[in-house]
Image 1 (cartoon, rainbow, N blue to C red):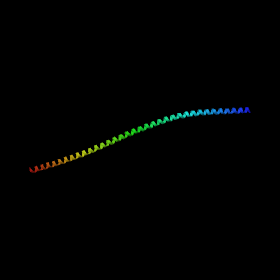
Image 2: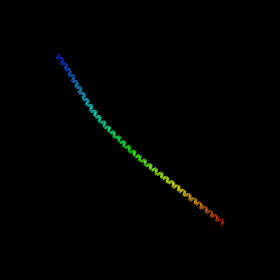
Image 3: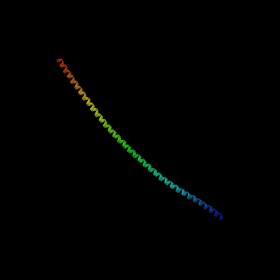
Image 4: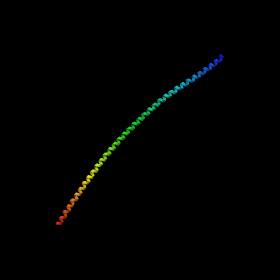
Length: 126
């Protein structure tokens, strides 16, 4: 019985030893997985940080481009206003010049008519 108990005890000790080895291997695997997890978490944080930086940079570039486009649009609108004002002024000057020219033509016609009348009158007199 003692031999049997001793054998049973040895088997139990072997079993406990194997269980301890298995537990130790699992502990080592858990530690390895925890290190991998920590490394991956660090890489993820670095990647997220870089993505955020790139997004912020893209937003800033977009805002700069939008401001530039807005400024160009405002400048073009101002230029259009100046061009329209100049066009209106030139049109008015043209109309005034045409009116003065027409008045001169009318005056010259009247003088020519008077000169013709004077000439006829003199011819009739002679």
